[in-house]
Length: 221
Image (cartoon, rainbow, N blue to C red):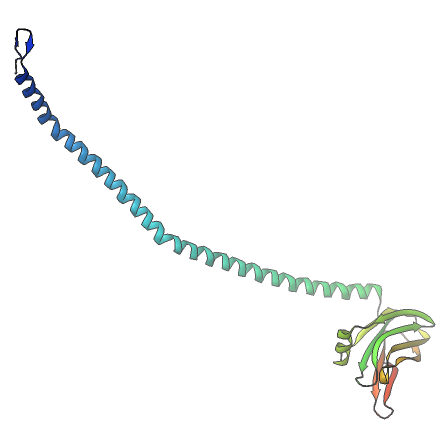
């Protein structure tokens, strides 16, 4: 034990200095240990943060690719479902139209009129007017796309209705451009007998090479 002595009311300075030096020697190892502990903790936290950042850098692209693949598969499956649903709707609409025709136009009284076109040089069809027993039942104007479809062998359903059995007269009037671009209008008629069952009539426009002009025919099926 260090005893401080006072002489003439003064502190013994060499003794106090020795005591302070001893205290510093005792606390230095503790401070060093504490510093090392703080440095170790900070280093560990830094290493953990670096590890997490590295993991994120490595895992993020993989996660993005997996998410994209999953989203792409979901979109493809949804697209297939939509296409399947569209096909079902088309089939359903077709069945509904057939059912509607059966209800509105029974087979015993059904009457169909179609237009066919086999021209290219002598007539440009623009429209048709149809009269049944002197009453106008249908008129139609044709676009260039529709004329092309008819020229490829298509048939246009011009009229569908009910017709009672017996004698009837059908008249068709065709108008368009004839040879040399002149306005052209021609008519053709058919007197026919409607019996039990459906009846089909075709309005045909054909080129006549021999006469070098169009011909307009009304014929039964």
